[in-house]
Image 1 (tube, rainbow, N blue to C red):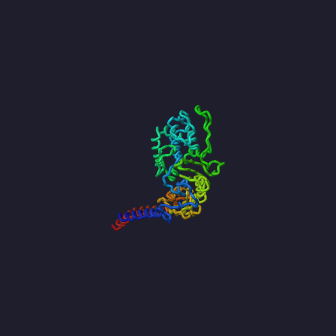
Image 2: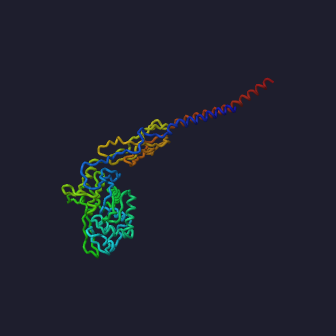
Image 3: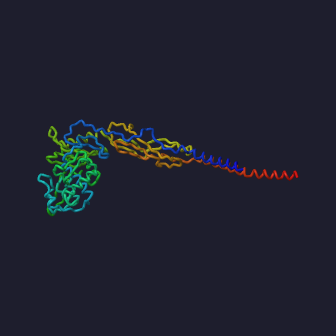
Length: 439
């Protein structure tokens, strides 16, 4: 009797194992046949086929910060008034636009002769908004000192704040000593570093709107009874100027005799936003402005040679799976990309050459709802990671066939057990009856 029970239990356990093993193949981590890579290097920072008249220059994609062209981008040079963009963004982040500041005697009188100013008088009061307009559009140097005194108490402390911010933004060869770019041998930067600062500033809508203005008007004050009007010093924005560039949206000019002509410019065309930094620009052979010709040539080069390209479209089938425990009608499942992915690439680059990696969950079993996240696809291009979730393209229903089979088998086992338990008793009764007849 005990042997029979052991046999029955063994059969029962075996049936359970068979049921579990029937779906074991689904318990896998699947990857593509593509090679898993750390990075696709696409950008080729080659010298453009035109002369750059600046001592240091760079052209970057504003979105990714990829370098599209450069000349001595890490050379330490004087930034002149392009310095003001860092002071401005600090003021925007630390002050409210409607806050009223008062010009001190020190701030007004600290500007050397020959430097641009807004004629602000000691004791004049302006909102931060008006000060930013005069600072970035007209390049009024005294305003940098007004901001510095109000935010940090003195110029030295504010310069420390500027340097901390520059380091935070990824600047490697920059040191500032004042808020406006007044000439100082210890006040320097590079085209690369100023591009990092400009890229950060252009993410701020307040800053972005100011540097795109062609001019500004400042209402009269008790100490200055006339309205002030200032035209943007950036000729790229002036439709009447020979250097007007229709796609330009900023940013800031600069000049001192030591720094020569400087310019930070930003342009947008067909969804592509580029930033150019030109430091230490000379005039061209024909007497044209080197900084503006450099900016225009660099922008044209960038827009002609680079385009935003989709390298993954939403709903693209990435992999086909067979779900073992699904119904016959739903067991074939397409895993698709949830999002489209794109970036700035060379115009002639074939996106099918990009490699990628796929990760799928290791417990993909029915039931599965449409749009359920099953994994992710990852691209790494020029050090930047692009990722999209992978989702189920349809519902997957769980099959009931194996459950039905198991239920039938279990019923058979139960009936067998009952039969085995009953049969010995019947045998015993028959023997007893037989023995009585013999006596």
